[in-house]
Length: 585
Image 1 (tube, helix red, strand yellow):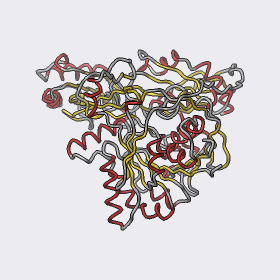
Image 2 (cartoon, one colour; image 1 turned 60 degrees about the vertical axis):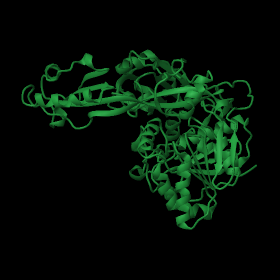
Image 3 (tube, helix red, strand yellow; image 1 turned 180 degrees about the horizontal axis):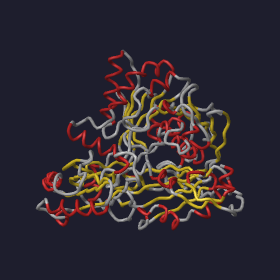
Image 4 (cartoon, helix red, strand yellow; image 1 turned 45 degrees about the horizontal axis):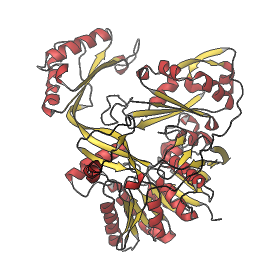
């Protein structure tokens, strides 16, 4: 049995704390340094960067971090694995090599690509291969995409490390693959070690968003010390795939069963968490507090992954203008009606002239307000159209309203006129058509098959004995009094994970919190298709709200286009909760 491998995270998104790599390398012993730089929106941003400066479609902040820690990593034998390569993993690896040369260092650097399907879309269509829309099952629209990247798994990373790479740069791998790869390499797992790989995927899912595992974005954040500067997490992954999630001593935040549960619910769908290497059954794992800032994840079962890979595809959707007018004080609805009518009289265009028009009144005002801001509601307009000139023409119309319509008229900052936006599509492509290409700079290129070996039968969810749902007297209070949440974006969909902190509270929630109840609590989602998945082993329920974010983050007209605050909105809703549960919370 090999010792556990200590895998640290130093980035949860492109733009995360620049000093995190040095903090993790200097803060205590680690064997591998990883970071996640990519999201569906990031791929759109990188595509725009790449179009302006070919060869620059990667996360440049990763290169800066390598300048800070490369020498220490080589001295301590720390492997570095990052998906910061984005759309240009080869150029990212070359930039890291230039940093090494400047520092007088000589690391072995490898990159993994093959995920970029954009140049192959025509070839695939001509061969009769359709990329199928993840939501509809129909072939994706044959439009001009600006990025199309398959989510690769861990085995290209394993191959690069096996060839002696000190630094591995990938393109669009899954977020968990950058953790599962070093773990599989270190322990010598086979590709059909499903349970071990599933455990590593669970650990990777927990730490891939950095400080979200140490108390960041945690519902019960007032219980977490040191959040003014939360430390980044690390996972000690054992030979059987179990792990301990922890952090360096003396850093802010905390690792608790609650913070780990919350992060496990982030941006997931069904309990069978699909990936290119394994389907990790999140409804089989067990969490236990092993000590201060140490949570063990054990018992995770794995199944063979699907024969398809997810594909993230972005295209330009056209142009949008977002305008917001303040509605202050009394008669808010009447003021909104006048602003809307006057606005469309002030422009020669009508709503029918645009591909999409969204108008709404947002009641952010308070009764008997004690500040000017508390007295203010908002009228919001978003128009979208392929014609940039039409969307820009609207901004002038607001000026015509300034002195001629409602009392207290002023515009709120934000938005803009004629801004380009992207639309996102999630697709599926046969895995055997997307091999991984592993290149060691100055060495050979190796091709790694993305197809999984034959698998075992489907495993069952872990059985959980629950008490009878609480009954008796109730009190109408916020759901957040006893329930936590975590929410996020999944393309045009949003997920809302809700967790309880006791068996009694979960038993009540599992019976009470139905899809119909959620529609009542969140009227914005009333007309949407909603999936409901129970994870009794985590005292959690996960909902997937289809279409809440329309055509993805960049196209969404919601104020929170990434659904990051959806869970906290849910927790703020009031319900009749059994008093016995409130007494135990």
